[in-house]
Length: 459
Length: 83
Image 1: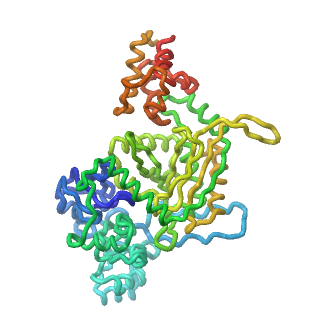
Image 2: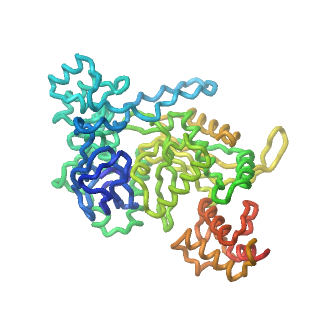
Image 3: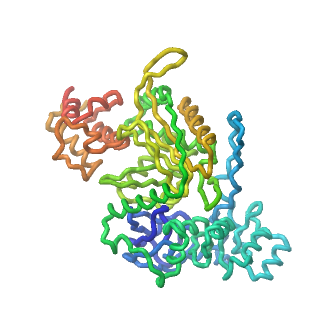
């Protein structure tokens, strides 16, 4: 049972879309899971053949429970060619240090490769020393996630596996191990969702986040013996009450743990609005763009240029995300809030982003969200403009480190070059985690956002 | 060219479009002059869908400049049936 958001602790299988013997590819929708918040389409983490479905429809199980087993291609290496890249994300480098002295706009840091290198699955080209060490420790190199160039297994990768912490030969990414160590999570109690059941950072987060505290996480991971929080169903909660509680828990945790700082700026949107209007006049009604699409695209590009705001706070340090998955706060009819991800938003052109946005909102409101959309956001944007407010200072979705807020586009007197004019403007705000960044970095983000919105045609 | 739309047809079109977008909305409780975006809780994407549906149904392309005319039920009806 994947954690479909930091606020989920259990889920009910409502439907299996595959059966034993079916061949699945990574990303295929294999089941529909009912959380307290919504029905979510769960995608396969791996490619292979479905072995067994372990949890039946209607069963409610805690996050981390194995739902089904899939024989991966690696396990059938003699019969199948190596799979397409399915490895867990390569460990990322620590955040680049922030330069304290004010400097001119630094050049955008090199973009990380969009896809993590495939894990060395079949025959990793490891050095003889590494192979020897692995053989001594009884480790199958094919099961090791290589962190060297091109996914090569390094000696360190092997050492991590044989370190005392990893008793019982738990397969986990180095990064997952690191955060598990920091958070005091016993890896042998974490269910891996990576290739071949390897534990990914996400899985460790799933364990700690749903419980809020490490102790509670351990208790829950202890299986049926430990006391477990009552599920929404047991409490007789409706979906809406469950959603409210989930939001309440997450937001309370954010305000308890995350030292927020807030910045605000007013951005002249006259160019953007003129561009939109002219474009919308030329296209069919269904291809019209709304200002929110431009604001989202600009946010995605801006955070790519200020990557210190794009990623996760992991225990005691910031971990930058390799891609920009923009969480979009969507209010549900009848109350409640969800923030699924527009994946790789920085790479979408505005019309495509608009299409995806409409699709996402429609599916979320219809209760059909995909699991990757619920877990992947690297930064969230909230847009309360439609409700008429001019400014929103949002609460960060942990473990993300920033939230961007847009108010309503309003016409205001605006002074330019000593002259007063009336222009459409929007108030853009940033709530950011002061553990991860300082106001200087946040200010750079809002400045970048402003500049980007002055050239809407190249967004 | 679209044929003339009667106020009754226009009302039906608007209600149909709204209930497709906001199935839970209480359209019967909607007063003719209520602000649609507020009363039915339409965000900008919903409103675009609303405009799209009205455009299709009426066979008339509704420009962004016309959005002001689509403020309430009664103004929508006036806009759609007034040729």
